[in-house]
Image 1 (cartoon, helix red, strand yellow):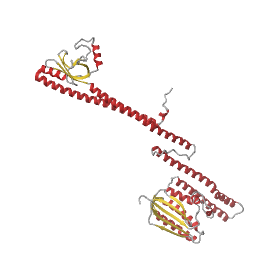
Image 2 (cartoon, rainbow, N blue to C red):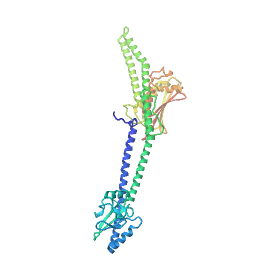
Image 3 (tube, rainbow, N blue to C red):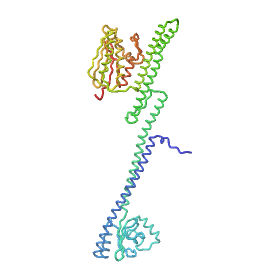
Image 4 (tube, one colour):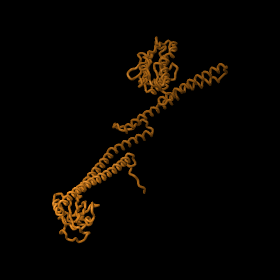
Length: 484
């Protein structure tokens, strides 16, 4: 049967936590061994330095008075509290003086520093009488081991072949090293336990958040675009990811609704012109017609087809702009120049229909945008204002103003016609193919304001329809250029 990891270890968070814990443990263990060995080396160096100082003192005493003075100094120092190890032996290794009663075999046979720590017994610690023969060498070694004294020393041979040993017990350094090791191990255990607690509380919370995101994602993938990913309000990376995905889902839902609306609009609003086009062609084929009749029918068909092409182009442009995708490039645009050109284009139309037309522009106003799209949107709005105000009042008038208010640039087209009194109708007027009852007597497809709204969305601006008292005021709000 194949080995399987627990279910929790299949998550990325758990695997990362386990990896970090493993790396942390390895680093902590290396730190423990390093600090322990470093402290041991420092204590050993300090011990050797102390022994060297003792040897130099004994050497000065030997030089002053020979063996008698050396023996007296050794006896005196060996009886002091916390004394070092002192041993004076004959050439055969028989202990003559000092505070060492027995020593590990072979230590006194080699001069210089002992290669390894050796075991010994201080005077008075032996189980039998000093100098009594042991039952065996192995029993003697075991007895020394039970006592547990270890030391390092320097062994010297005097000119008369007597042996002098000065050493230092390793009990204190070993206890110090043991304390350091236990402290570091305790700190390692506490940090490891703290890491597990952090993983338990923080990691489990992250896993629960991921699980809730997965549940919401499955619901959305099942077709419920109204669902949203949970946001806890903690402001962490999970919340930021959820908020961005929620914005994306809202955008997708909006585009999906727009697609459904376009499909419905095409099915309903374009049915009439297509039917009229077919009837025109059928009428041209019925009965006896002259060449002029056929030409007139073909010209009408071409005009109707051109209108359909313009409608489809407008729908395509609106969809691309609302989706945030367009091949149109953006650059610095002087709105004052755009307003001047469009007003100059529509002045003859307004004059022909008897509509007063004027523009108020407050100097050059630069925005970041596309000149052609802005001009097309402004043209649609001005065309509607002239068309729906002409003949509706005694003195129709259309005004265009351009000014800056705070951080916003406001381009406003106002008329004194009948306007749109109902707030709901003003909101519906910017939808595709929507034509209110007052506008059905005028030619058009109901896409002018929709295109203008899409253009403003593309420019991160807004399009508002406001009551003019009388008439209607259409506001195009642009964000101010940062380079101004």
